[in-house]
Image (cartoon, rainbow, N blue to C red; front, side, top):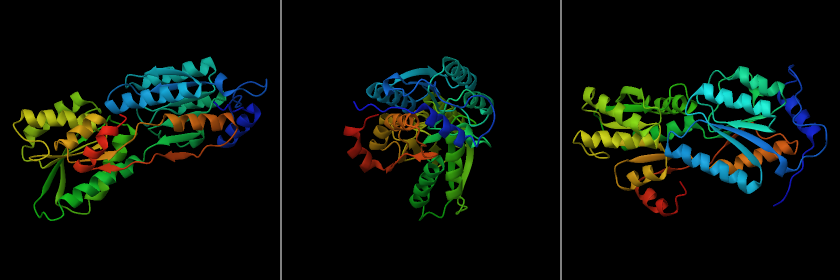
Length: 330
């Protein structure tokens, strides 16, 4: 394995540049003892939780990538609670890790702890989800998907699917965790696209918290008050899979009586698409491990990573899902 060496003073200068020379403590990363081999780096990663198949695949990929790179990864599972993530980040600061990475449970409420990391001179990388902060010097880089674009792709399919229909199209939206970036952005992108035609109406929108159980429970309740719904837009596959269970329990056929559009493209979702129970899936790749390692190595080299790094993703219909399933990694 090729080893990369760090000029710690250069890394500190890079962080100062990103911080706009804001005050608040020592902003150098590491000590002044000289270059630090990559295999001596320590990265603290604070994960959202294990709420879905996507998240499990994301965790597995990140852990494997750091193991392959020979970089120590300290890992914590926040169990979808912001306070747990903040506690983990503060622990990483106290331990003096070289880089902190995390996928924020929600968008807001991070400035205080990120300022603590900045004061300690520890670079922060956001993965999968962004934060809503006026000060973008609090993190070095964001790595993940364009959630607004994912919502637009879902909306584009809906518009195309019903382009010849003159009847109203009633839609139930299964939202992700309230306040989470993907929930906010996927709703926004979808709404922007379908707004062009007033035949589309979101008759109900409620959080299923990105879980299969939540998707089932919410769909069961919403179908009772909206029995004539035409389509369900789920912010992730796990909620879509829960919706399938609720639709079948109601004596209806998912994908036929009620069409389903989802986001993620995990194996279980792709299988449901291949089986015709989901009609369209927008991909959101959880395989961010290698790119995250590259960002850490850039920081280690005193380089400045791109501020926003977007993963390449596609979409799937039934035929494409059948073709992709045999080689699907997650």
